[in-house]
Image (cartoon, rainbow, N blue to C red):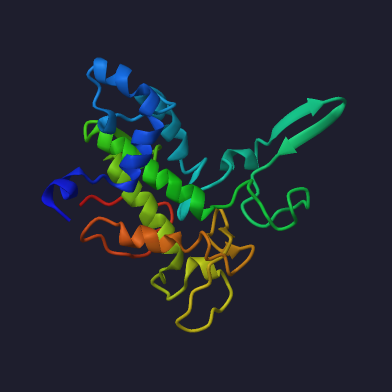
Length: 236
């Protein structure tokens, strides 16, 4: 391949962006907007900060092993709504579902789901590239320290990977009280919102294996180690 052709190549992501923005290319260029350096987001920086205040609150979404699918505040304050004379409610259910309404053991009302969390990690990194190191948030929100969005992504990634890392007692959080085959890992469908115990199907390599992606994309020098329950990010 010639030098000219090599230099003209774009990544798959850039090609998608260029194709998606093709109808807007001329107006953006007229306005002097560099297309590939532009982030199109639903939230403003101020809205993002308010959103992360709740997301990184350990009393709500942030657990020792990732972001819960429903705020833990609904454990004592369930969301209720009355429709046509009937009352419906959503509680925080950190473990297996207490109702068969959503497919038996599937539960999106509390547990930690790996694919959702990986999307959050990747989004934090994207926002960090555009907002820069001047944009910081507290993590944990109540008593943590100021971190950049990249550092927040690193901490969340660390908490997720810690599901499959033995703690000081040699216990894997994802194994709970069960014994796994020696040297082998099970890839559970989702994880208990408080303890990290693996729940649902135990062969969910289609998305829980994204833990490998988190390890491979971790910053240079970042070591995989257990995440102490409720611990704030350590200063490097």
